[in-house]
Image (cartoon, rainbow, N blue to C red; front, top):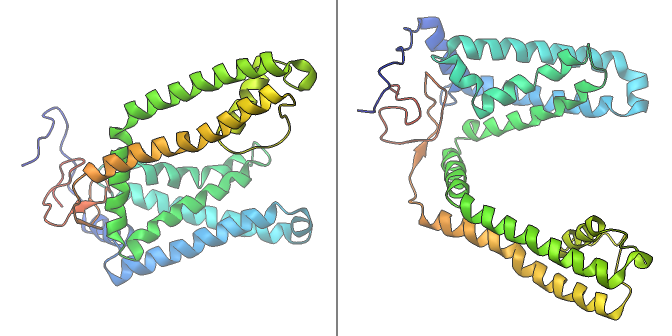
Length: 279
């Protein structure tokens, strides 16, 4: 039995309508649930295309009214869908603060904000993140599990990554200071911050080319930084890969918790591992 907080009030009993809506909106195993998700995917893609086309002045001048009508129609549709999600879930606050809950809210806010802040509707392209729900539609539950394990690996290696980033920052400051002394302002290194910018661009192998060393000593130092950059890039990849290898592989299902909407539960799970509700 999962441990529960004695001070937390039990979720209210759910009506047949709420259970039916939850089955359609949050589940993808039934024909109705799959149809709902497919229609939602289509609306998401159309809304993103509309926002992108509206940013093109020629198309906006010719079809501006049509695009605005489509945008508001889809926004109202998403608003109704978001409201129904809150209505049929057992713990709406938990859903609102979840990843998909935040994305769902952000997908409808830009259009309403455009009434007060012109141009903010273009932020509606964030709706493309909702396409991640296609994992459930295609029954790719294993990717949900892999996503959870990736987050666990990132969390487990966070201290090592913090030390690595601190070391890289220290190194680029040292290299930038050396390059400032070697090259000087006459060669474009007008300050230590600008030299540090050059060190970051060079060490990450980006190489914009807007500033480069001109002296032989500066070019030698740049060559060392370039070679060092290749080895540095491999470090965080190795850290995360080691943590992923250490995690035990588990099979998961696409079943959604009726209380918090969390997914990625093991096949034999009887209770939600996030909120303790019965599955």
